[in-house]
Picture 1 (tube, rainbow over the protein chains, first blue to last red):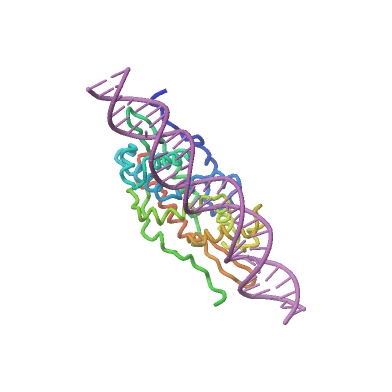
Picture 2 (cartoon, chains in turn purple, blue, yellow, orange):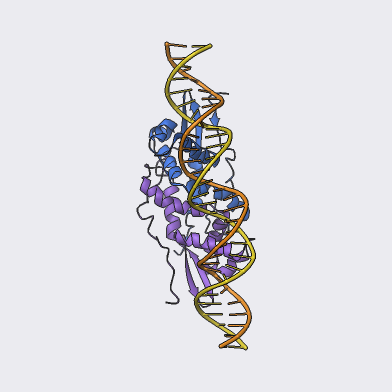
Length: 123
Length: 123
DNA sequence: AGTCAAACTAGACGCATGTCGAAGCAAACC
DNA sequence: GGTTTGCTTCGACATGCGTCTAGTTTGACT
């Protein structure tokens, strides 16, 4: 039970939300599943964490690399990483002493699509 | 002072955040300005409101059209619309008795870009 | 003026969330 | 085994946020 990738509890919660939000009204159900992801992005520290992780060399970053970049305590960083993990925006894996996080491009791409302008928009 | 479009207090708060979040680390300042927009999208009712408004005929919706679609009180809808307005995601205009809201495609597009995958991503 | 309807504001209430210090776990190293 | 280092969990605290009822404003129509 070591060296196992920790997946988000609800990795496919966003499954059938592929169409832009502006194209047709979101169902209550879809909104309920999309909102937590956006809420997770709604904190400056989490945004920077995600950005840092994603733009790190090799696409993944150790927690120790992240902690130093912020003015908050290590438990706080750990908490924010947990939020990002539970919404499927990042995945974590322990390798020896260190825990590495990487961004889940698929989830980001899906959220991007939801916010995108559908073809033939009048602006 | 009537029939005037009410603009968001900080319409250009997102001005220089055009690059994907995964391309390079977000500055603390950029994150601070982006987060409120994502936080605004982090509520199911606000997501549905935005989606409803954007996909309404003519691209705009009267508040009375929106209120009926939800199980919460009118003041609560008003509160959520205010949040969306203050983050620049929607704009409102009073015409006679009614107030019409429309989605700010530019803001949505910017947020979409921030989450998008930059060219040549390894996935 | 008086009235009515649409929308917003004010104030209050309870739950959620960000933060911390202290304690706990896990892996490596002596 | 004992210790150290990296990271997470626990429990507590203050603040923020979603919701409501009640009251206010704005415009239209007699």
